[in-house]
Image (cartoon, rainbow, N blue to C red; front, side, top):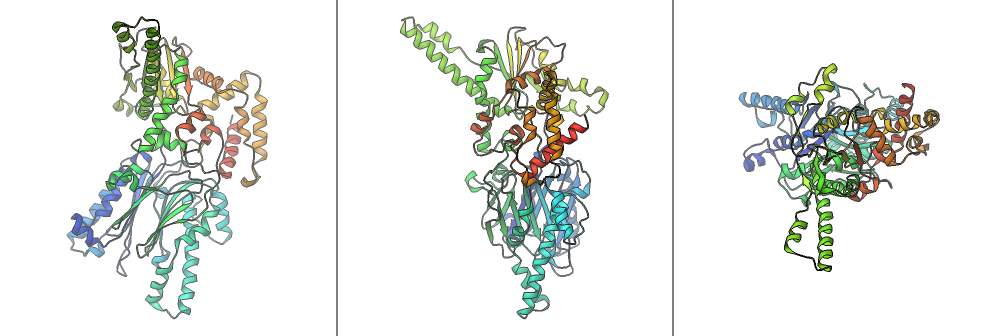
Length: 623
């Protein structure tokens, strides 16, 4: 109901043949650039703040440019950067330049879609970043989908070695850390090459052929805490994409004898490359896929997977495209699991209940919910028919009556997308928000029918309070039942999702309100004292999650009831009930993605817990 800001998206393309090969086979040397565009456009849901691309050509002539980059801000950034690249190419072609000199005529491409989770905006924060050097092997371009929770610690580590990073941004810090290790590796190879008798250009080629990005990753990656997929290319033809050892952020890849592609989502690759699901492979926790100057591809374990591998469950519930075959089934399962709780809320009276969803990301969970109701009704019909048969009262008419039982599913809310563009003035925003959805009148019997509406998540509750409940109440149902296919969001995320301020969470507000109402405010004070005392404790030494005490005195049902009170207008005459997915239901539906820290507070990395304590201290001190 209140759209979360999406995570960043990454894309890599590596052409494994000369450009002339693609010109002959596909009618254009821009095959790689075109694939990059498709991979990025299909991931546009993952970032609306801006986008960027880098191209590196490894066959460039000395004295000519070999790194090309374009970046742009805004939701139309993908179109803008590819238009700019196209204009440069057209100008070069008009001037008759050879292919080897044309901009973006390379064999290595990398793209990024950015959503800021730090509040930092501006062209300088857009990926990919570039670190240039007169030696191609020491030039780097980097992008990623990541948040490092210990960026300050890594900053201090590299500063202590004499480096002078221009920014404390985790992206700049990573670029400088990797660049520093690359410099040391090149220097080592320089000495070794000279000892072996190489000089001049031969020495440069010797170095370029022996740079090993896996070694550099193994030197740097052990210091990283957070969720990440990091992509990097150097000027001489080495590239990698690496996934964090907890498996928090996702990455997938496909390659054949012509091309290698990497992206944040599997169906994106399937669509762009027109391949089957089994052709696309998941990059596993701690793995990196690497390509060297000779286009040799290998997957290597850089860091061992952590025992508490925690693949992000929100990817399955909300962020990733529902066209992924596994995600589609998991979202249906989430809806299916909620049926018993919904039946209880409407007193098993499906004859007087209408079920629907709030567009559009909850639609698949809605289909799963309908499937659950069908199974329930089929079992009820079977029992009714068996009962009549047993007493000899089974007739064609009453069989027909029994078979008429069905779930009443309707399209209740329709989003007015055009209207939303005018909601800009703060003073009238809430009033305007109440008209973002149109409702379908005449399908609810006034004061008789229950209305059940499912959504994928209830995070802040603002849209629910200011818009949804008011809009649906116009239909005057007997009872309004709001259903979330995810559990209660109780804890912030520090790994790349825009959920870092816990005071915004409606579940947190509900728990705090309950503590204050019941004279238990000392619990809040105690949590603050313990979080404050942990400020100078190393993250690796932290144990208990003190913030869990905020929720411990209450059942899930108590918090759900309080959420209903907080989001329902006091003047409303329609009873409202909120139903949330359980943690067990989540894990049953998404068994391979156990990262549930948003709901459980079980952070997979020490840095996540450290950041949680810091966030709670900031909340308490600003009350």
